[in-house]
Length: 213
Image 1 (cartoon, one colour):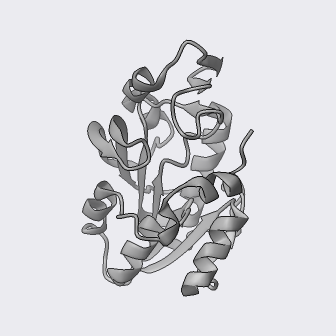
Image 2 (cartoon, helix red, strand yellow):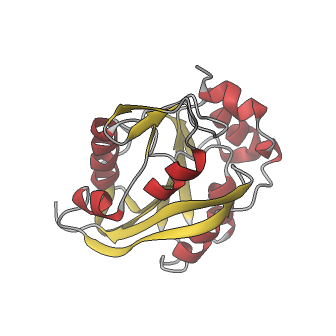
Image 3 (cartoon, one colour):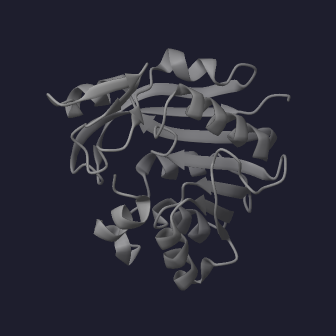
């Protein structure tokens, strides 16, 4: 299976010039000036660089050595960390907001439960979590004759650049179950052009305000 370091090397985003996700641009308007924001799975910085330019106090985490080295060379070595999103090296209630685009779908429901538990842990009560992830309708666009469901909702061998990795496909109903007790601000399916896929796809866009813990 191709690892994330090799995967990032193969992509054309290495200039760091890939534009931010348009839904992140919209979400950023909700945030207070100088809000402390975690870019959850920062990759090559497409959303990180945008939020930094907007004046937010941005930090990033990623599992890829190549990604962290790239961000460090860009001058952000003190703001990014290599880590496991199932157990992040941050304090409880450290961030005002967390942004995660196409990250938490990598795994099964047990993995996703752990990811989201950690996301809620590091965001302070009243803070916001924003997620973009592939929807169940996205799956229909990338399913092939070789696609296999390896656990409920999780598939491998799909027609995407990282299709050999396991992907979970979300419904709005499933997403709500992960955030009981939080105030849901947005939970909907959106058709959009993916710079990653180079075609129209359907994502689930989710935002919430973290409730009491």
